[in-house]
Amino acid sequence: MSDSDLKTRKSIRQKLERPKRYQVILLNDDFTPAEFVVFVLKGEFRLDVLQAEHVMETAHKKGANVVSTYPRDVAETKVSRATETAVRMGYPLKFIVEPEE
Ligand code: TYC
Image (cartoon, rainbow, N blue to C red):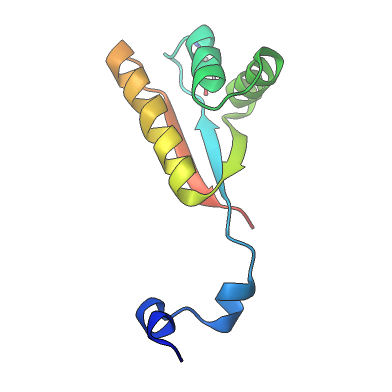
């Protein structure tokens, strides 16, 4: 094993797997305005207006909905930025990040 293999201690199986992707899941709540949810989905997650409205409406009806999938750091950064924007506006909008199956 090379030095870098020993440092990272990744198995050969892990090296060959495609990098895991993470789902960003939008959670419904009773207080955040629908228009603000659409604004965040467009601005932070780069959805177009029709996709953003559809994702928002499905979360509103079902309680939660997948926004999209990303590498873990990208998913977490987008969620932090979106949540900070909501907090600044006084809205309780929440997302969860979870590994795709
Ligand atoms: N349920 C909110 C309302 O009626 C709108 C909303 C939709 C909030 C989706 C969050 O993830 C959400 N104002």
